[in-house]
Length: 629
Picture 1 (cartoon, rainbow, N blue to C red):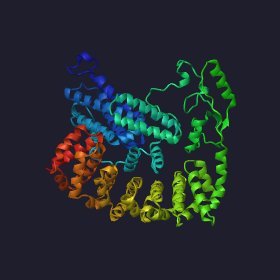
Picture 2: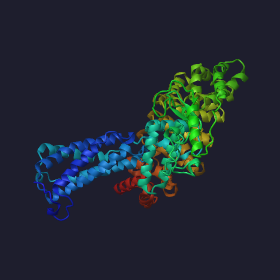
Picture 3: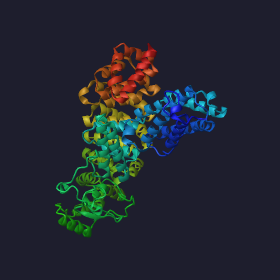
Picture 4: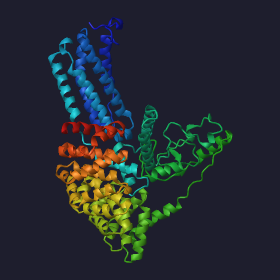
């Protein structure tokens, strides 16, 4: 029988045999209670849960047989208990942790999974099955799990390179680029951070993360806060303070304990409404905040998620009067807003059919003016974009792309870029035959026309089938040319577009044929340009393909990587280490060459002081260097 008295246990045992086994069962039961996980770790979480489920019969048989545990058996089960607790904490993190943190730190989180597998292996490798009365069937099952976990530790899962590059572009661009909104929308969609409820849950998760970090990892925390604020911005949510120190509105400074009726607070901003309006769902919001929500393309009620039958805003005079009376009674001084005029917007919308018609006018000046106005109208207003499409604006715009007038080309391609913000329009633009014409503007258009063509192509190939089409139709070479000869903005747009295009393997060869390697090397040499990370990210994708690796993996390039590892920024070093590891794993002579330039000491330094990802890459390179030597 299992011992039940803690004081009867041999020295060093903190729990009785029975309590230890019950704790193991409770840990598995607790871990199994998590059924939903963040997208970036979902596969790994379900694998871990499956392995825990397969280990359950081992613990159940021990509980049933209740043998007295030898020192060795107790030690192994204690190790297993610590592994189960680590697994439960990790599953909990992936269940309700910050989606942004888990995506940004996906490699570090994968390292935590491997650490759990290592702990389970350590416990199972020395498990004395004969001493604890385990059946042959359960023993075989446990040994199979142990073998699977060991294989899993060696597995190198492919990182979501597209998501990583998207994060890099957004976090590095201090000024809004042409493609930034499209990138943000893509990340938000991937991470499921589009609805008010999702963003509020993410805000709470980030607050917990900040408390857990207790002031550490300040730079990473800053990036996470910056990203969630950007997501709130494109969703039209005015709620920037996520640090838990909720700012007190001016009207409450004199009386912070004042209880405000919930009906007086806007569900989005959580502040007293000064201009309450009713939307189609019957809910009331502050005009300014709900208008921002609608302008961001949302077509549901933020609170109920009910689809909106129309987008009209009706003033809620009754509630406004109640708020005024309450403010007077409680001596609260607020400035009540006036309904915002919508006449100008309505007139502009009504102009769209005639503007679309003028795009096909025989008068060049009229066409030029119409294209410019369509460009403005299509910029960030989903209703305007829908009206342009409904009135036949798309074929008219595509027809203008081939006009010799560069100003018309510029305004037209930018209008198509704006229209492509909406997912359905991406397909329509491609099917309408716009891609080869946009590529032609990319080759021969004005400077701004070329830049916006690159951004338009970037937006269009968010639809997977368009990636191959853009490459097949000759889009790679002019993008490589823009990367070489464009303005700084043009080069950055081109780099972002090329990176995403060469996720499609045939496009890697097209980029090589267009001479991208020489251009990327020049970018690495021009530190003032500030595009070292973008260049190295493209090099990493090229190096990951066996047929392209020979073009990239030269001794001279390895020397450049070593120089960046020695002297670059922390992010530069991280990217350079990733490229060197990819090359070294497939060609040991390149690793030996790198070590001849004093790399080893720098690897040791980075393994202690680098970014978390750089530390992991440095440690992998240290292990590789030991094999090579």
